[in-house]
Length: 181
Image 1 (tube, helix red, strand yellow):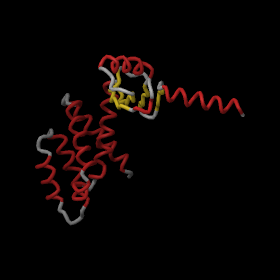
Image 2 (cartoon, one colour):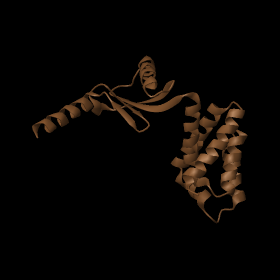
Image 3 (spheres, helix red, strand yellow):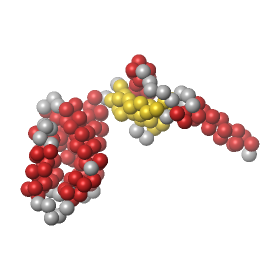
Image 4 (tube, helix red, strand yellow):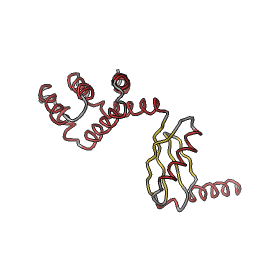
């Protein structure tokens, strides 16, 4: 069975537990932290992947290093250690976030702008584009990109809405080249 399918199953099971305990936001935050720890710390990942490190030692590492997390998240990680599936942690976290977003009617998006956007600007972008994609709101991350010249570029999943000056100039250039032919 592929890792993606397995990660989805674990994420769904953990999501159901989160719903039962009204802790979707808490689990999402904790899984995001776990994902960040494992994706930025290759040595830790190598320890969990190493065959000479016993399962009991790996479980001890999880229990001691992640003691501040909820018991359900820690237990899920312990099951992953037992079943030699620690490689799916990042996928599991991503799938959990997707399930949480779907339940809330939100979507994660990235806004690229020439300057940091104010809170009211971000909320109006969220309102306008959320209705376009059939969601109630967007969780926006603002990234400053000086190459845009002006305007904004919005990435929602695999869709890009380009309202930047540089994007408009590129479209005009393509149109001129196409008309010249």
